[in-house]
Amino acid sequence: MARKGFAERLLETGTRLVTQAAEAVLKDPRGQDAVARAVGAAQRGRKKLEEAQTRFMKAAGVPGRQDYQDLAKQLARIKRKARELSHRLDEAGRPGDGPDGPTTH
Image (cartoon, rainbow, N blue to C red; front, side, top):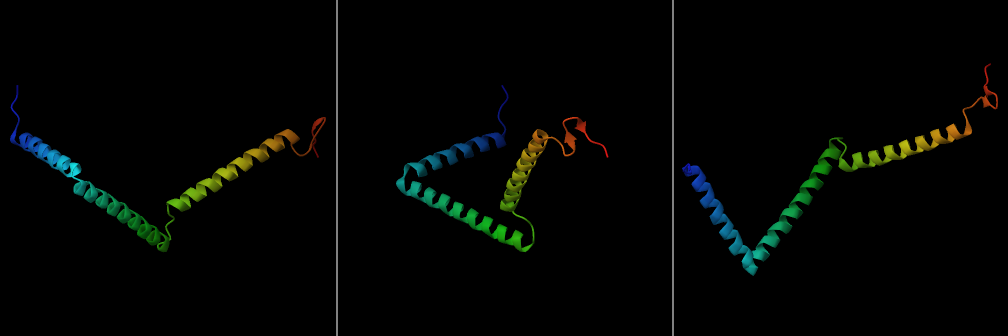
């Protein structure tokens, strides 16, 4: 069996110590509260960053994610309407089609 190198032993020891510390923090109500506050702060920070990014992109004339989603919805509606109109034309027959088939002028 091969012996573990120094780096592997160091990584295992570090991982074990971090796990023990995290468990100790999460068992303590003060630690739980601190983690909850940190998560809340991270979420608020992410929201602020996204808002700033959206403003910057808008100022730079770059469409944002919501713009693309709105365009995708509009395109889907246009495609659906085009299919409906095409179906209606097929049911009604093409212009110039009579009971004897297409007319030629």
